[in-house]
Image (cartoon, rainbow, N blue to C red):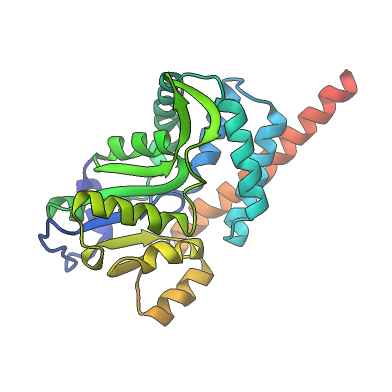
Length: 274
């Protein structure tokens, strides 16, 4: 997937210097992908009957609240972690990777922000490495990075023994303050100068990540991040024009609400029939 189809959304004057000690780090949800990647993954798993519609309703409701409120509830994040670990325990890594590939092609490929993708390509064209940094499973992050031609991904890692998930995490969720720690470790390994690196995110939850590099960019920022970016003098790039926001955000929010209600109704109906 190349940037030719997206470059019109990035100003021609924007340039990225050639610098082998620099790299770019992109958040995924609502920065590179419209919406939450873990929700699309959950949708794909539910359609394959890996868990119940009740679980999908919880994912859908969390997605609606995230889109409307622009924030993430720590309790919901913890619940999502427990649900995910319960699902993968005892399953083979190869199975999950195959599912990630299918679900990305089915539900996520057409939801890539073209403007953000073009920004990533500018770094690649300058000889810089580009990583995704996400709280989603690293397997899903790797698939997205590979499909977009990026260097790789940092993500939440589930423990694996003999190719099978144990149901435990290697570390905690790669979220909030955990992101700059992971980026710092990668920078030390790859010989990167963080002062010369760039980070991109839409969420105030990623202020720690944006603050750990020399150049921070708020992409499609939530209100709290927009205020933080203005205070810090960070660059802001919003690919959501009024027209696009009306065409993209409203239908997704409405679909999430209606989908949640439909699932809840179906579950209750099946109970009554039982």
